[in-house]
Amino acid sequence: MRTLTAPQRTTAVLAALQHPTPTGITPRQTFIDRLALRIALALLLWSTRPGANREEIEARHREGIARRAREAEWDRRRALLGPRL
Image (cartoon, rainbow, N blue to C red; front, side, top):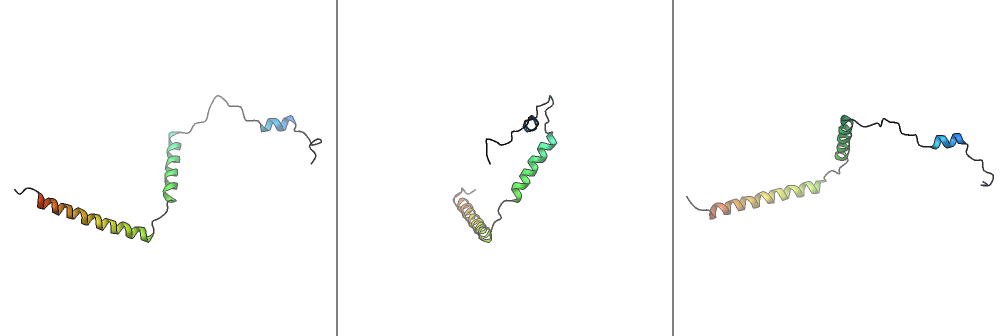
């Protein structure tokens, strides 16, 4: 394509490419619209989170059992070392 003889844009095309001029009324979102958008975003993020695999579930279960055993041992030691009434 030769740029020296390329057809030039007309003023109608230039006017169509211009941004519209803002009017006095600016469109704003209502409180309900903003709330709906936030809820939709939260649901979208919640639904796309990765699920736990079997190893993670078993590791959490073992950690819970170990934590309960440690807490039971602490309670037993506290009961043995506490003052007797």
